[in-house]
Image 1 (cartoon, helix red, strand yellow):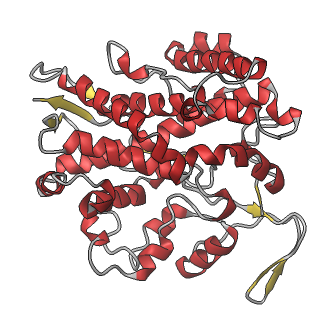
Image 2 (spheres, rainbow, N blue to C red):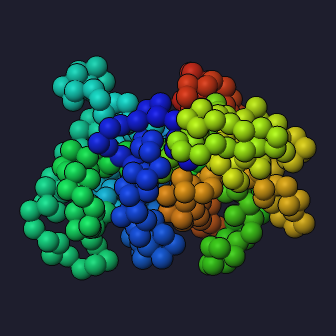
Length: 399
């Protein structure tokens, strides 16, 4: 199945590639870095970045300074994806003030804007320029000579340049676009979900003590309450996310698919070749369609009151104990099939590490500052759902 090419970037990232076969060729060289084994090799680096995040927050202890946790988490995620892309730390989290320098969610669109114009209109977007320049320099270095680093530190772009992809797919221009999209996808999705989870952990008195007690263990994947918090955050925050692989999750509206060569049969209907199709989003039929063809309206699937009683409430306990199989069937934060989220394993590892560091028993003592649920809850649909326009994000004090 081809994805509808609303935001296709010709000669650019795999993320915005419409054609199925071309998408598969562009995605394949990236997969080793984001596989479960690939992410396992990165755990030491990721732990260092997480501990640095904790250290930065502890530096504000007792100062009464208001911190936007979203900005700190964006720096955390940016440093990790920067290491994967460039083979070196980008050190976004070492800036004197933890501040948001860009809106990575819109990196695909902004890549079409001349840098001089972007800097004039939006000086805070300089992170695009910094990362793009570093990425371009790194890509040129990878093209000019073989990597002189051990395999564990080879970057995504060294791997692509040394792959058997056609020269057009290894061009400097295309790889630069790939780098921009990886930055956006690898930053916004994970950071926003961790911030979303942090708000509910800090705002619901019963959750934090239970989580702290569980975090006395050290096996991240054996922490059922932590994993339940992450699952519930992904269910509710789905609209805040842009995935490393596809715009097929993280948006409110339906995302049509196109069958380029064979008709699609659904019940008694036959849908002709090249006709754009999206479901009406009745829950039962939608689950079947997502499993087979990956047409999605995930916001509706994740807020079905039959599958998820009180769907607007943050209830991590719904994922513990005897779980209705329908919950698993309709829970698709990373999509399914050939266009599922490339960064799924990385995102889960980042979310687990960050929440453990932030909320373990001896972690930084944070409390919310002048924030309520409306600052994180979906209120507007601007391709991706966003909270109220005057939100200041998840703001905290460190005691």
